[in-house]
Amino acid sequence: MKQQPMMEATDHRTNLTTHNWIIVSVIWFIVGLIVFLTYAWFDDSPVWSKIYYLWDKAKDLILFISLSVAYRPLRRMLLYIIVFALIRLCWEILTNIIKIDPNHQSGVNILWLILVGITVILSLKQLLNEWKNSC
Image 1 (cartoon, rainbow, N blue to C red):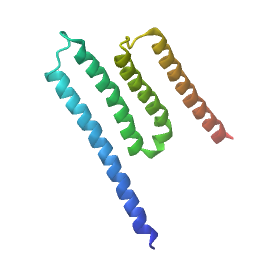
Image 2 (tube, helix red, strand yellow; image 1 turned 90 degrees about the horizontal axis):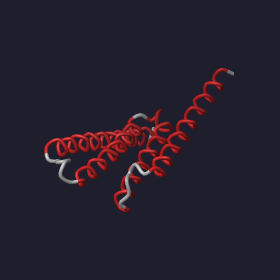
Image 3 (spheres, rainbow, N blue to C red; image 1 turned 30 degrees about the vertical axis):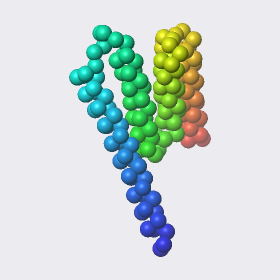
Image 4 (cartoon, one colour; image 1 turned 90 degrees about the vertical axis):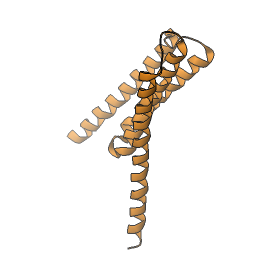
């Protein structure tokens, strides 16, 4: 009997965390759109472009974290996408710090290989699950 209130408290905390992540992702998205559609001037300076690309990468990361918190069954699959989104965000920050082009060939190749690896892992997991279920 005493475990039930604890479970309700845990559920409430989980719901609150989910709610907070969704609120953060919506606010991040809306504020970014407002700023970039009203104030940003992309023609004069590359600074706005750099800020936009950082916002865009962070937006994707926050969205996938929100989805993984909201939908527990998808959490394992979304973990790979979150890792890739985090690597993309770190790559964008790194290119701004060391002043290289974000489309630098070796960086793009590494990101592509990571994406292919994630795709292969997810595909193999799905095939293995289907094979186990068919036996």
